[in-house]
Length: 407
Image (cartoon, rainbow, N blue to C red; front, side):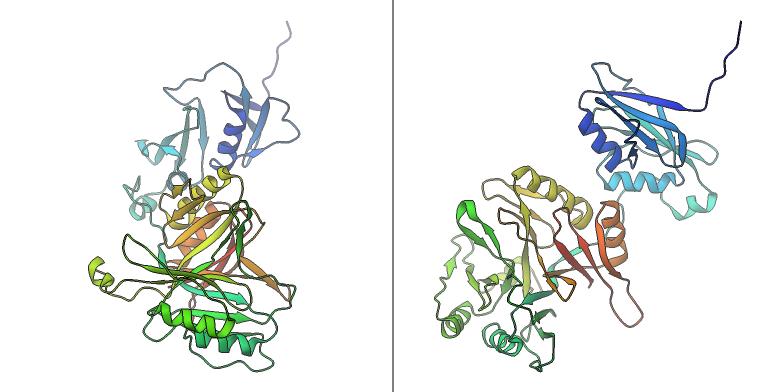
């Protein structure tokens, strides 16, 4: 009788009910890649990095794999980092175990509850420098309520735009020359440091505004905290000839006004009631550049997905979905709003993509790592230097460019 030889190609079969959901998790969370050539209807063949002869097959069926233990065991180059990253991504991970020597392992559950073992070998020095299981908290970048800066397209007459912003919003700084491409103005005296940069742009460059046409509503891009909203109201009427209504909040007596600059950029102004800072125990004045809105195209499910992404990889806090208002609040003064006009939070000038807003963080390097873990495209990254604070620009899941600056 002829013998036979077992070949090196090995396939692990994972039987799942929702094969598309499983594919998304195994690729986005676990980091496997789909083998287009070997996949076919009802079966997604996944490749394991650096393992040409090992595949994982996701197949739609009514069978179930064991749920009490993992039959799929994957080795990683850094088991502690794998545990940290999967935890950040929201995966259901168990604690790292050390059954023998420098061998360490942990289990993670896929969306259908099947257990997968991840293992690796670590050096003694790594154990000294890492807290196993991060008991707790994974070090993350913090996002502040106050924004670092905003960038606004204002058409060809840059000097006139600077004069308007200095008059109405009491910004400070030198007027631009005829050759300047941009002009950076500082927040009013007494406010937390922040800047507003005005850009000379061609008429074809659209304004920063978002529309929800289904509700016939224009959505503002940033909220300015002002000391005297009535003074701003009068200045707007004198310079634009338009009257903007100030609406009070019956709950806390805040006063709010939505308005446009002469270049159709849409903003909001907010004035706190007297004594509000003392009431809430805030030592500083309210940030001049406060809430910013980021557009998310319909449908509503996309708003939920984007809120989860920002909460996981940008702010580190769970998003708050407001279904009736079709918006989502996340930490750090960021609000995601459902739009139906294709708007994005950036504009183009001379081949450059300029983000409207730069948010503030305490750790730019950590933010850079978080964004990469979330699969974001990093359009620009300048690390902190000896004589300057770093900045980066990332592209969110809906292609809006957002800036981040070190506080």
